[in-house]
Image 1: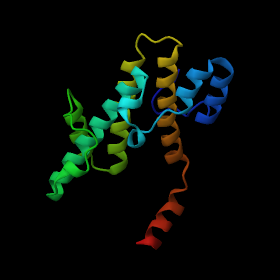
Image 2: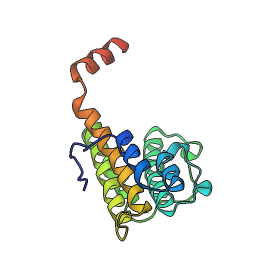
Image 3: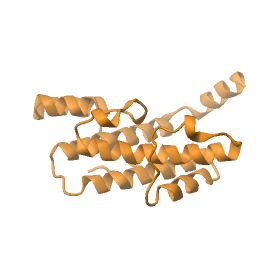
Length: 164
């Protein structure tokens, strides 16, 4: 079981190695090629769990674009990934993250909501491909935050100041 804010039990690469030994080749190809939102074309993806995840994540990113573009008085349409409007709580999530006092806190809030959505996707899937897809996305989130926690913050600050 994975929990938000925990240290990942292993890397995504180790997860893929374990999957290779235990699942069929077609399922492994789906898991190993889990697309990132920016690279995915929804119409080409055959897995419903991945489609639902990418739809949610794209709508969330598009709402952030609309908020940021509005603050800069820029037309957001050329930056949006989909034509559809966000449903449910997505606009509120994006606005709450945008209003967060720090960028890191805003990202944490966004990833917590992504995690909650993945929990919803996981419901009813017990060690099938849908479960593995959700697990892979959760590992990506945990890996990202582990990288943040383990980074040398002084070196990052110095590098940023030198480049400024």
